[in-house]
Amino acid sequence: MITQQSKPCELSPVVVMPLDEDISAQELPPYDHLVLYTHNLVKGGCNGVRFSARGCPKEELRQALYDTLQANLGYIRHQLTPKFHYSHPTHTLSIPTTEFFDHMRQASYPNTPQSGRSVATSQASSSTCSPSPSPAILPHGLRSPSPHAKAVFNHSVGGRDDIEITAKLFLLSVGDADHGSTVADSTLTEYVKDSLGRVLGHLGVDAIDHFLVSFRGFKITDTIADDNEASKSSGTPWPIPFHQVLTVWQALEAAHREARAKHLGLCEFNQAQLNDLVTHPAVSVPPESNQVAKLVSCCSQLQSLLTYCQSHHIDVQSNSDPSDILNAQDLEPILQDFGLDSEYSPPVPKWVLKYSVLLKHRGILVNKGYIVYTN
Image (cartoon, rainbow, N blue to C red):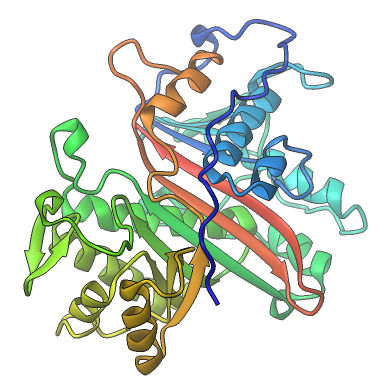
């Protein structure tokens, strides 16, 4: 039974630790795209874990981002140089580096053999502040799962079949009226491919068990206000143009056909929206799950949704993540503390990917984190 949702928690100030040295923007290369990988919130000792227990995803993410930047750009303890990876062709700055995650895996599971891979890096395509493994490059600049990462990951939990990986993609700039424009369909497809490729490479696996997508502005309530809708399909109110939803879903279907995402799901879709998508002639892989907020079980919208999902074999799951999990106003002050803000325009997060790794036979969460992409 789905119970009443608790009162939303208010955003608390990020727990700021003093830096050993000031961060200067001159120490980091100019970038067009910024990708932030948080540490493992389960084992990394992040302050954000306490926000997770309180059911505050926004606070959890903000704190995890600050902790990641402080650990990699803050010159703390034994880390004397900043950790980042820079791609010259795309002007993409990634924090932290692949090498950092390989080190963290080895530190967590020291019995795993070290990799014999070369640490040579092509200076023509990328650069780091310290040597890092040379990964295979896939289309869209994605990194293929390295043999070392796979070995560490598999040996650490007893094999890939013993773990369940869930990834949830928050598309934050779809129908972005706040910034005066909407995202092109081709860009949305790239967001799906890029986010999926990054989490696969980060975790060192070939496929995600459950891949869900969350669109900003979707929320199931007792009534749906027609005056805020951006477009309609078959008379159904949509917070964003329906063709954008369809474009994203077709990108997920492509990942499913490639065996990179085994099960697909949505967030906060009501019955009419689900039906429009499922019955569309261009859709060949229906969603298997739909995450909804913790509403009162007698809510008319929820009752009809439960009935519809049961008849279409769609699992309804409880959800506490807001669709606008990160915005520019929350991200900008964090980046400013580390010299990553822009003098021309504030950073705008385009997507956030939240992932979790569950040890199935024991029901233990062994890994949890976020990947954030911003311009």
